[in-house]
Image (cartoon, rainbow, N blue to C red; front, side):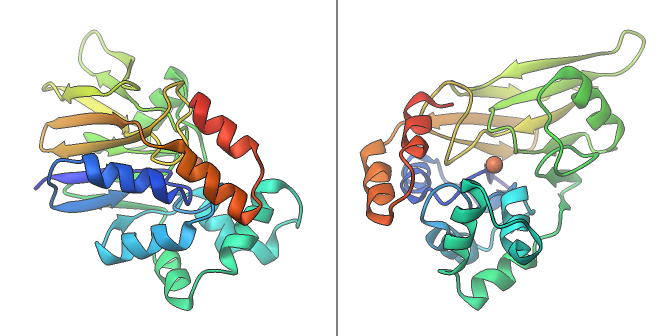
Length: 240
Ligand SMILES: [Fe+2]
């Protein structure tokens, strides 16, 4: 089984289109959370995820959108979520609400943040060590940081935890006795300094990372059409 592994699409439809044009064939889609937030096309992104029957987990933006009434009504992030929510159908909302915070596929854990806490950022070796302690899975996929890479843990007499960056793409073949916490990177808003849409393909021990450039002007146009703030475009051009 070959899985297309996606995270943090954030309503950026042109970025998802670029992924679908570039990806080699795949069997199923795993989604690590944050379908919505930031960019205008949350509805189209959800349409596609529903259409392909993606196995998703909730991200913080997804959960905030579902619970907007309980949150303070201020800040650009929440304003965007309220705008998106008004454009979602009941079917979109029910689909989003059906996602758990974590799930397992073939013994592999899917979670938005850390295996310890879906809202926590796996952005350094210490949180990664704690993350490994919170799961027995050999492989876990996560998102949230928008950084493509993998934390690797070797157990045994001389254990270590290391980080390998895959912002420019690349391949990880999981060695025996090594566990991994893998982030495919963000489709919609990379933050590792490399513009473009990030995604991964997973098949057994092999994880291939990709980064594809696309016409960012398409996103700029959508932002202008909908009156979204300019900084969302600037972030895309910088990959930050
Ligand atoms: Fe995110």
